[in-house]
Image (tube, rainbow, N blue to C red; front, side):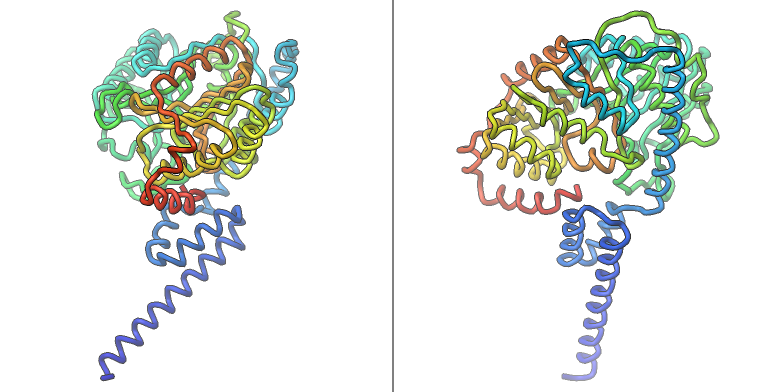
Length: 489
């Protein structure tokens, strides 16, 4: 071996040693400082071991940020303080909740959500289910046009397309007419927007601010801690919550996805106050120099009697002490006596949810899960089908929606309890993203949601144990790899 070859060999050894030391350092951070779930820790350690350089870059993009966790913890503590103050005012008014006999059996879930997210049960509500994009945006646009005082909107994705520009220009018009317009958008979900996309709103006197801005202007590569909420509040009287973002694809106009099947709710009544509070707390966190007085009466007008639907608005995210929405799902599943219907675009449950569903199916509960037939995130899709396989063995039934793309996020149990909102049935929604769901205790509304689910079955293909076993080796490999990294997705 000549001198140059020896130097190259020594150099290669030094690089390998350096990579080994870097991996050890990151392993130390993972195990001793971040105190992650052991499953997540092992997944990252495998990534560091098999793809050292790429693993390092992935960790920078997808790993935890201790500084941000501390910041979000402070936000969560401040949110709880504001909610406690708001509840104190309600109790001072003598509006103490008395449960009707029809939902008395669900007192444990109601108490759970009060304890884990300070969510009060509201009983004066009316719900309109919006299962089609055109229907949802027609309703939203009509409410924006008729707003008398304020329009508060918070969305994960807003597109620079026909619908996105229509909504933006309408908000600008209303701002010029003296209506208070405040729009909060996510830095990652809206990363492709032109630099001055929201300028018409701000020039008209409205406000548009970014949640969790990028490190460098207009380049956001951080995938964690995203504001995945999709809500709108008009005059403190009407609110929207659910899965639809703002863009042409949600009207079924993008050939890649085809018809977009999603679920949104239009709410009126007391539950609107809690979506208003959710918006205000997120706004105050994101926009420190543009505070909204959190309890100003003009944002919480007295509510007329509109209905008898019982609703809790439940939020969760990296600012929450508890994984409130996941705990709500778990409690619903374990209480089921007859049926559990789930629609979700991404089915990557944690161990507790997966085990609860398997136990329910083994116990004779009718467990049906509906997922899309096509992936928009391939790794998540193949991880989903791997979990589906386990549930099929336990006796659950699974279906792929064939009439376009399924993005609905709904859970219905026993024709009695339902949850609709922004949270997917996956670990990212449970632990990493900011989410908000409406938990509904009303047989009439839940039965309507279940009927929509049953109607959707006519557009589905069932995944049977036989068809699942017949999948190709390539698909099995994709599932195995995706399942391995599923805690990181």
